[in-house]
Image 1 (cartoon, rainbow, N blue to C red):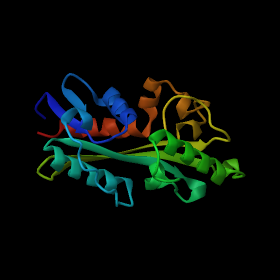
Image 2: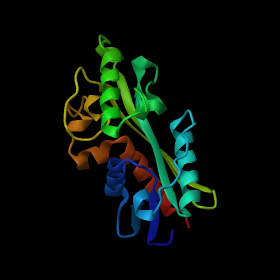
Image 3: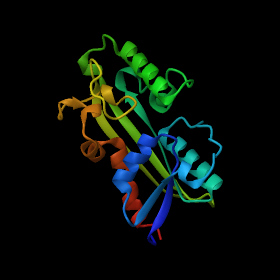
Length: 206
């Protein structure tokens, strides 16, 4: 790819922008948030029932709206004992109303209630992140996927991260995702794996 190149990260979640910048940002690649390139832009309805479908939908919609190269992601938590819930509904599992912090609190309370009494052997879970890069002409240039395996803890721990991070227990680290320092989390996380795969794909795009 010709360098430098500017890519818009299509999310209203500032934590996601920070994480993706930390993983992909360099002098050769400039990452902008939607707020940095104008708007407000119409928010596409996420009608897909897979993470990849929603990532693609968002990338194409925001690329058309901004007239720029856009990277979009869709991510969430899959819990084995809940047959993959909350899945693509992770952000609004307990309702779409209220601020992001209020939604996170309700979602985590719902997770605690649904997992009450579930034995350890059935508490497997993972974060999933799918990414899509599209241009303003409607072409999908690259797609990537990453996972972050763990299990649902008996109680939330840690003040870092966001969303369901305090609930994903990592046996090998002896802590939750919310207790990892940012560099370690980026090295291990679903978004980190997907972003690095996307970075590899970018190198092959002329």
